[in-house]
Length: 331
Ligand code: NAI
Image (cartoon, rainbow, N blue to C red):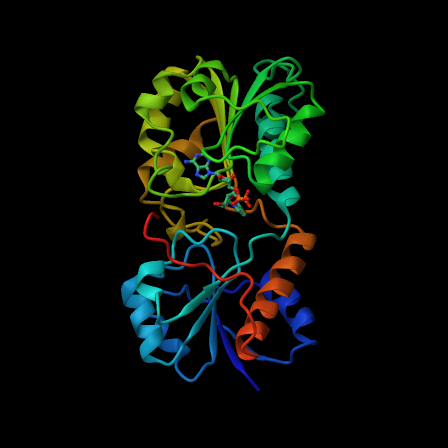
């Protein structure tokens, strides 16, 4: 029976992986530890490793896994920016889950936008305290506004479809536009200039790192809403705080945060958070933070478990790895 080391496990992962594993009967050991250079040794004696978005899978981690005879790393995520693919080349195969539910993430992006605009988070607290005042809760009609979508892959496209139901104008930027679609592509500059709302749906690469920064923010409309369900480091967080303070940014919905790995997915309610930027952001009434939960639907979790275990099955049976991530020099 193949032994699988599952890192950074949570109860909701276990429920779905155990269910799908009935088909494969792997011996899955669920570690709560995140995978990094220090914890990689836990994989000794296992046949495969399952990792996640906040694991630190750098060269040291890869080397330690390799030393312990691990030849397959199955990421249970779409993004793999935390994996040093160059270090893994010719040592460890890296597979991922390219598709599990673009709906889960796109719907969450819209949920953040609607909640922020119509101040639902504030109304919820008020009415529970029997404060039925409406002062300060004014939003705006989405109808007729311009939404800029950066990245029109699987999630970006679903988000665009959802937006269309609200009667908004859509502008999009993607270096690889879908020429068969009816999406209105513009330059990044124009998107920044014209959008009332900007939603990020591109991967984190060296080209998109801090794509939202002081310079790009200065090109945007006053009061622009920014929604990020992609990766935290797309936004230079301190620049965002400054722009929120001046009102340049009207509101921010963040499912991801640059330094999230120390906090997200964990209960830190008893701790003093030493990250001042996160503390400031979470104190602002026009900032809504969710802790990387956009993927968290039953459908997505089931598909993640199904594809991850299928990826491992293909490896163990010397089949073509349909979801392998290959290192490309240009990345
Ligand atoms: P995808 O690969 O289908 O689409 C990404 C799109 O971004 C592609 O069309 C690509 O051409 C475009 N792109 C690449 N470089 C770009 C650039 N410099 N500027 C603008 N666009 C660029 O990926 P998918 O499935 O739509 O996911 C998008 C991102 O969402 C993932 O990379 C991941 O970081 C994030 N994600 C977040 C989750 C969450 O729970 N918050 C869960 C799943 C994904």
